[in-house]
Length: 226
Image (cartoon, rainbow, N blue to C red):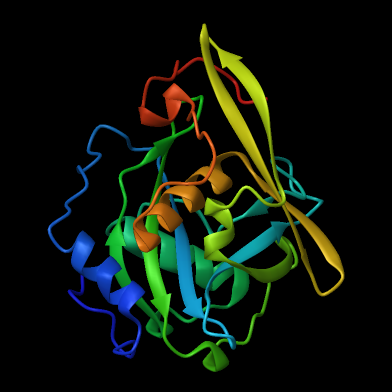
């Protein structure tokens, strides 16, 4: 893991992020042979704001079809670690060359209802122009980017109260439009981006988050995702 973000000397926010996570060592999930990792790839937009790369999953997929997601997926047997999984999946899904991404840190995992750990890998794309999206049509319908700070704001956000095994939580939905296309960013993807934005900008969201308790690993292994 690199201790600084190369090529971002002028970005205090990203340098703060690198410094903040330098001592952080997420637990090794040795008890979870089935696991997944996603890449939270941040870059600086033309107006100087920090943005994150997102995808819209293919409508032909059997699970979560048409949902907005972060590049990533389940680990392969040959993957050495979560970083390798996230970078490999991003390359396969959207053509993002791993050499263009400077990995800053790895966050603690988010668990799905079936107990699958999803590990967010935070990386920085220092040269946005070098990345030409090449989405894999079998998996990805669209590649777009959104401002990271929007996941701390109450604008264009709505929430739905849910309950799981007696525990109430809020499911957040962020409405976003890019190139005349409308996207809805929600569920686990929204949760990961809320946490990432909170850490990057060093402040909590402007709304009540009320996370699902199973994200911390309290899920029932026999539960089937809706």
